[in-house]
Image (cartoon, rainbow, N blue to C red; front, top):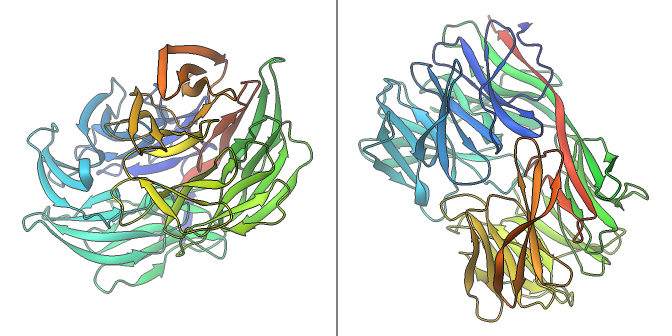
Length: 532
């Protein structure tokens, strides 16, 4: 097998997509911490940046004539945009996600509201529902039209779980039915056709090595395509028969603490670190490092990075909340093919014990002020949306509180309310859930963020809004379940960072004295594998 390096980008290269004529590749890469859309020639050369606005992007593919690139955002309203491949002004295409062009270029397919697979004309108008997934099905991550234009390969995935695995379906457009191909043990982010209509490619990690694998639709067999240490991602078969393009590279990233008073920064960790969770007193932090593709470590340290303690190791871990006195913390262990397992442990990692809940994927756990109750955010196959549960911290039968108020991010100091967030879709914004009567109330509509927290006195809450060059933290006065006046700027940071990076990408002390944020980096390049 002959391998040729095409690019010399040496930066992250995510969600790579090849044009129908095989001449260009679109991808996203961070600029000032925000994932922007780039395009480059498959013959090589310097990539061209196409977007500059706020919000981390995901490239979904090209128009059939290759003139436009479709992309969406990781957080915010469910909207798809397009930008000219040669550069120009982006335009709104449809309200939905995961746009794919039909082989003849006459139609667009995408996921609409309510887990509907929708067909429209190429302008986004004249929409028709092709298929509706049931309550037990997961959201759509990728749509690949068959070359005959009569069927769709649809990839469904779990947006909360960090583990590998997705489910594949073949939808008959005319009959409006779906054939279930079953679960596939791989990464749903970069699924692409190998032989259109017959086999598809994806990356898959086995024993710590990430390579490209093939799934055959006829017999549902799996075959390893690339060998070696990898990591190999974003497989793209050249339509002109040149071979297979892949992205090869390694992610990295620092976790940095910024002292607001001194305006000084300290790097807490450099081993691909993310998911910071600052304790309620602002003195300690827990975070995740990813020393290998299939291994995470959970650490606890002082807010300046001193006195580090490794709390746990696992295939995929996630930080959760602290108790108000900082004596206990929560974390999640996510193993491929198994339900997530939430744990409670002392701040030094001792005495770790599993909670009773075992329903699916856990996004976060929060402690009540008296530490007697744990609130869990979950995402489950049988649920239409995010769920919030509760159980006794000592162990009890979990009770579902709501499936219509987003994810909980903080508990009011009086223990009466959960501060919640809907971070994607048509109802994006900040909400609250009354624990007395279960009522969900909108507090701030249209706010695109990923994390809200109460001040320690419970009289206000704060949230962060990144722009391409800086981040503004707003304060909203609040009392007894009601907002007071309009949000005010509490802090403006002279740098930007993403909202998400393998989970939350930032956190800050309740008094805004310290902001901790991830600086994702790494290196990756485009390669051509001649398999003849």
